[in-house]
Amino acid sequence: MVKVIGVQFNSSLKTYDFKPGRHKVVLNDHVVVETVQGIEVGKVIYTDKEVEARELEEPHKEIIRVADDKDISRWNKMREEGDSYMPLFRQKVSELGLDMKPISVEFSFDGDRAIFFFTAENRVDFRELIKVLSRGAQKQVVMRQIGPRDEAKLLGGYGICGQRVCCDRFLTQAESVSMDMAREQYETNVNANKVTGLCGRLMCCLAFEEGEKKVKK
Image (cartoon, rainbow, N blue to C red; front, side, top):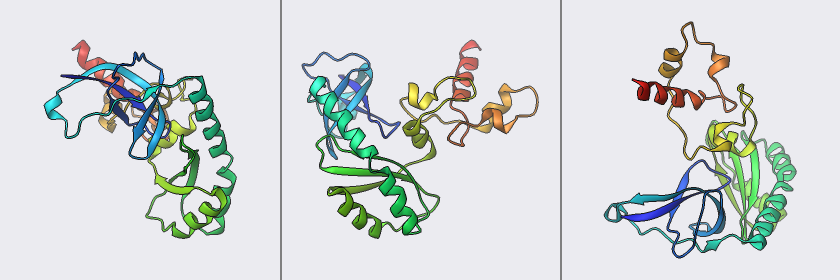
């Protein structure tokens, strides 16, 4: 068995496993790790998870270090610089008449790349957009399409319960939610407005309630 920690990045609900190595890591720490996209900073979502070593296609990488004040300062600076490119992103999408919705811009921790997040119903040819954005940002541009739930995590907000949306607060993965879950939890006809989250999908908390019912049985 191998002990790993779960690291989540700003832009995704997905959690990635890393080995803590010699570092002492606790929940909500920020850690510096090497990813396929380069050096990044992520937040620790869980610790001491055990996985079978023989089940791993590739060995988990160890974290580089627990982020210190200098790392966090740089990380926040890169996030702020990324935010400053949102007006350019929206402007160029509009000028080129592209059927896509700009969501956010992030600069990589090393400052070499600008990641432009968007949603779209259909496939989008953004080759010309990449050229324009590359000239404006003076960095390697990566276009990344995300789903409605990741959009809700990135933008944040509050649900009808008055709490911050679960995907922004604590979820480590997108929940599988069905309309049957909603029907089972409402004695009368289901009101769509009551079971739809900010993302336009069924609320993740329906899955929590379903789990509680199974436990009680």
